[in-house]
Image: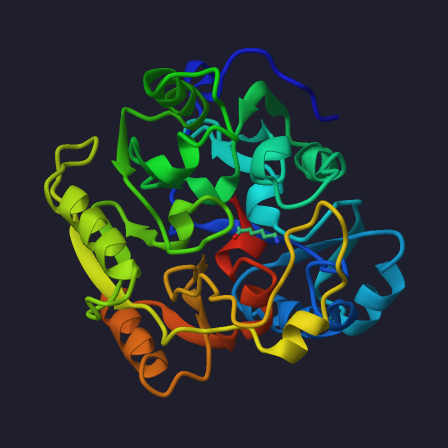
Length: 366
Ligand code: KQY
């Protein structure tokens, strides 16, 4: 039976492992809301199947699906992918799901169940309500018989943190200090909360993330920890692109800091794709609903290659049929991660929903 725990992971000797450490499995949620995904979410469902199949070649995958979509998802996904019924408001497992922490001495894994408010609650949240999303973390932990820590009064999404598993976490000020998350807390109080629940010594603050990212610029779109002391940073050489200064400022911070162990960071620059704009057909394919962020023709997508997922032995990399930058992204990552197979997946449908491959996955450590 899974228990709700008092105390914190740090006090109990648990830490959040880096994504590059060994996984027991990967969790995802089946997409279905027609005011976020075009054409009744059918193209997105196809893309999610491709991502799940790709990951399942390297580690087990569990897909959480609503009652309404259970039969459809079960039919569309290969038999070796586990399908469980969990209600949600949308399909961003990284953000609404549990963040897993581990005790290295006993091997026990527990879940952190952050309070979730759909990326901004009533201030600038992306939809209303989000009550089912906020229960996803507890439900997945119940299924796994994993005990949980709940952070009532502290809002956080899993995509807004990146850890090295050795005491360092990287975040953006744009997101974590935004008035729509924890306006009652100071920067220092937010740091202390992260330190307690992820077992950290040092937080590195980047000013911003990826331009026009509707999550208030989650760190996982601009940066990825690929090993202790090594990060990949979304980059552009185009000084006229609004992303240029945002990435340059992040580079400045990263190259002038040390991590919790006193190491300088090795930074791999990963060029962003050519600007991706929503077409009129794509915008028309999304239902307009009060309270949900509307999609409009010409909207620039917050596309980045840094939003990949690290599976056991592989990197599941979003690509965009971009003649100029897809190949460069594959080459850059293969150099940065020579022991992992790079598996490119066409991700346009996922970014049209407002996120990317990392945001729809959540690793559970072994
Ligand atoms: O990128 C993410 N972490 C999630 C984006 C949610 C978008 C909802 N429309």
